[in-house]
Length: 215
Image (cartoon, rainbow, N blue to C red; front, side, top):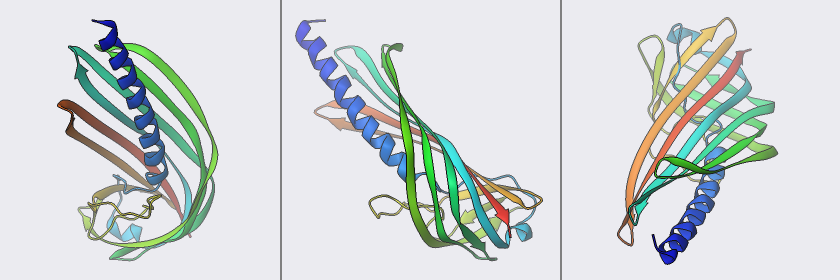
């Protein structure tokens, strides 16, 4: 590979790292209370007032492309947990209402750079405790079997930093253990785009846990 091509690839890697790092931080802010995938014990047990207890999860975002015959991949792994929870969720037979839900979160971002499937660079950044501002929103839902629900309007648990909304309502699975309600979300996506004739494949894997307590 010529020096010019190596330089071009290095610049592209740096650009990908920067953009992906920024995107992961954005994702980290918007995914805190995203719609989960759950494991359950009957829809009747959902109804009531629930105190928000905690949330945590992992988002893995990657971007891949081929330049001058070399396969390049940048991967960002964001892991977080919450503290200082505030707010409640009111669940009726047809809606889930978040009221003043807020918390602080902290975590790490791991950035990995691969060339031809070989790890080239790995770096870990520790994120300081950051407040997530209070949200209040509402969504319609319907139960599916005894351990799942499907959202019929905007998904609950979501507040995007830019004030936008998600395009797909999605759904959840749930697990009730005594007064504890655990919501689990898993979401995977993959998109391909072209810039200047270079194909880029972006993937995202999200795993989020939300814990509530019956009041």
